[in-house]
Amino acid sequence: MARSYNLADLLEILAAAGPDRPALVAGEERRTYRELNERASRVGHHLAAAGVEPGEHVAILAYNRAEWLESILGVFKIRAVPIPVNFRYVAAELHHVLSDSDSVALIGERSLLEKVEEVRADLPKLRHVVVLEDGAQADIPGGVEYEKALAAASSGDDFPKRSSDDRYIMYTGGTTGYPKGVEWRCEDIFFAALGGGNVLGDPIESPEAIAVNADAAPMCVLDCAPVMHGAGQWVAFMGLFSGAKVVLYTDHGFDAAKALRIMVEEQANVMMLVGDVMARPVAKELASGEYDMSSLFAIASGGAPLTEGAKAGLKKHLPAIMFLDNYGASETGTCGPSIDSREGTARFMMKPGITVLDDDLKVVRPGEVGKLARSGHIPIGYYNDPAKTATTFYTDADGVRWSVPGDFAALEEDGTITLLGRGSLMINTGGEKVYPEEVEVALKDHPDVYDVVVIGLPDERFGQRVAAVVALRPGASLTLEDLTDHCRGRLAGYKLPREIQIVDEVQRTAVGKSDYKWAKAVFAS
Image (cartoon, rainbow, N blue to C red; front, side, top):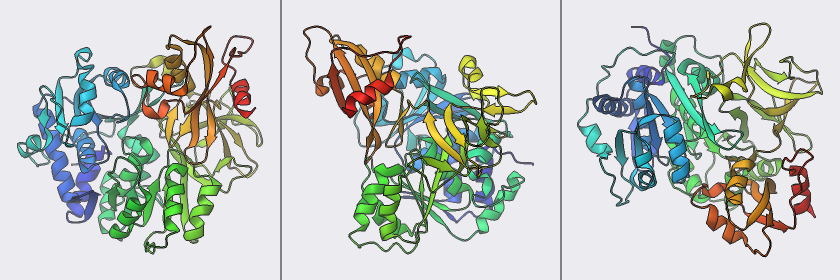
């Protein structure tokens, strides 16, 4: 039977070709390709028995752990669609994603599901919950224990035929701050973001061709990024589909010493970090000289760029290290590696089909600024949002379809592309994307706040930190702690302001829009 690019098909091909090859390490849990495939099959059979149909959506709410990858692959087994959910979300944000995605089932850690219970009554489509144990004692009414569910399900691969058109969805923040589900075909995401079966060479030409990776030289990838995010998830799948052993960093907070110990124990060849927020602590820890780094030849970064300062800090202790710092977005996949930057800007050597377009969907001339765009393997659009889809995905006069997510960029004379940022507004703090408007709305809801503008300020460790210029109502007095306490119930922790400036009046543009340039000047002064 011909196979598809559905990720479950690819796993089954690799498991048949190299069943005893190490596939996954997560804390104390270890899986071969056969074991990972069998447990994913049990997840799929359980969900099917619970009534989940092909095309329906199953949310996954968990920290890095072996069951996360088992679950997402198990969902693909039955041609359902996994919905990765940010474990940092508060109840209101969880409600938005679970509702917007039309999720009918949810696999989550007990402590995280407790937050879902706060809004469960407002999620009528959510009819089945599977509980991953994490030591919490919260009661989840109707929840089925994950291990009991798997024990009662078949480990066989007797599933209906799958399709390369089966869906993959990744939620990302929208321009208004509300998460939007970017909907891909499995074939397109595999070639656009998951390595195409050959990370360093030409992509495979058929699903069956991935079997050769079961005979590849052993490799190990230590993935320190959260796999519920695109960067961490894509690196995990790149490793898995190349036949490598994927090691997940499972602690809930990043500890550079712990990560380096794991790297040494597992003899990792590639270490995946999230920008400076992880790279700087790693560089500092390496100064101790306690670690045998001989197996490591590359450090990858995703979700946030590595600054030249962070790279220099790592190079001091790892002079021969290679940096795999790629640009990527939920709407484009991975686009190309960074090259030495000029004046602090991020420059990338992009893959074919990726360029900079003007407002008429024409390629800009070298030296000009436009918007980064990708053709070829791109998403279908935003799930359940045709209006937003129409503002991001376009078809030009020649019939070429483009994904234009809004990142401003300049095309250089040498063909490289310099990224300038998404409208220069989005805040990237430790790899998490924060949109100012969402934070502004939450702050304005405080009874003592009259007006506010939110910006990102440079931060040595996190890249940027959230900051706010606030005008108070007459006679009011507020502290940063007052405002963060007010927002905790409606915003994830990484979105909370870390710094504020109180002003008499918030300056706005002539048309009444937030004046972000002025706000930055307030902090500069």
